[in-house]
Length: 460
Image 1 (cartoon, rainbow, N blue to C red):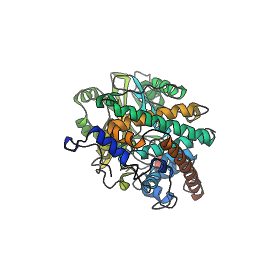
Image 2: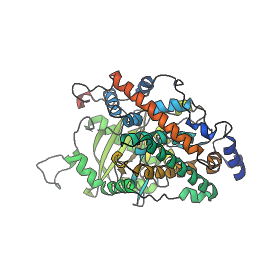
Image 3: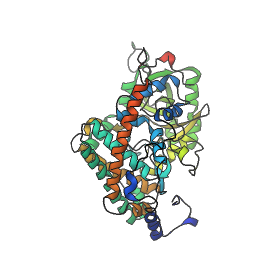
Image 4: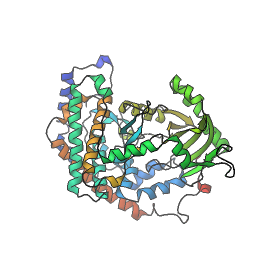
């Protein structure tokens, strides 16, 4: 087993030795054998794995999560990290450890504002981040590319070509990073081109705090003018519901511990804002059922809003399958540290806190954030986007792992890329079967009211 290269100087190995370590892992897991998938190796069926992962979530929203997953195979895939984690753990792995995004798929990349205000495009979801075998991120990305291609009407041959383009780009960049000074790798900027990324950047440019203010808040007194009355969150149950009383006080109170881990200059900026209102927000697919709060703060008047998201974080879906991984003391902290390890630029208000013994991530809500659209993956758009995915994963893995070891393993040639393309197609087939099983189970059948209403929603 190759050691985690996140080590101290006493464990220092020469560049040549690190490359040889990577090459030696081919004897344990041949590059071409990355196409394998063990059909009967799951510790339990997919529905049981999903039910186990749902324990502790808001009961009224678990059914909503299954409804969202039932919309399409890709929707199912987004919510089924615990299932894929079990499937990947049943396979031999390289043992070459890096920081994993953990949920590397085509919708978990997007545009957002860097601390200096520039818009950047990068991986932007780290709920499942953990240190583990580098190829697990690549296999999840490969399956997502095939599923996205199928949803966009692509032939499987085109989707597999997109996977190969992604992995070839990953390998090419990793070989380049292996030759670069370490600090240059840490600062490497990915310059994105293409319609898909351009559209995401345009969305991010429009997603200002003022735009969010108009989208999710309203005047507390509709008869008053904009300047006379404060604003408050809209009621759009179950997706957005106001929180009041002790629960709201607890949420606002959690900003106290959060401030203690921020850099002093961020603490000063935050001190200039006052909390105005609190809401519970349903987000994503995989996160549905977890407690997610939004705090609306106001700075220099109503035209200066700040929205903070306080999002519950539980253990990574991979944690149970990585016995040698360092246990997370605080899962919000785990996400923050994993995100900063992989990203060059991160949200300046990124942090963590606790409420009622539960762990939470804190970040800005929708501040210049823009995501990709599944409709953009038609024609050659998927392949162009796949190459960006490959480069971003390579940069994240090289920053947080060891480019020399990974480059030593992937080597040159197309065998590794072709194997992962085949794995992606096989796993997409398995996902479609699991999706059909979910639909047949009745767990995703809509309730009579259509969804969980506000009266049903208890976040305690």
